[in-house]
Length: 95
Image (cartoon, rainbow, N blue to C red):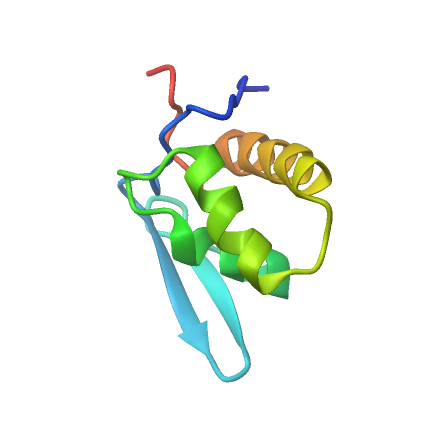
């Protein structure tokens, strides 16, 4: 699994797109046609991923939305980012 640190800049994979539908969101991977349903946390996280913000900046923005300890949020979001890289939704920051 990819190592995601607080200074890691995150961006969507070239063939991944986030689509807001109704009260939620889905991610479409164009190369495989695979569709992923996002929970509220993943949707909020991916909304902040823009290819310029690092993980720490994204956590700062999310801490305004969610009432949770910032250290816990940072750890949870690093794990989420690593999972999304593994699924091909986020670009591999090491590539």
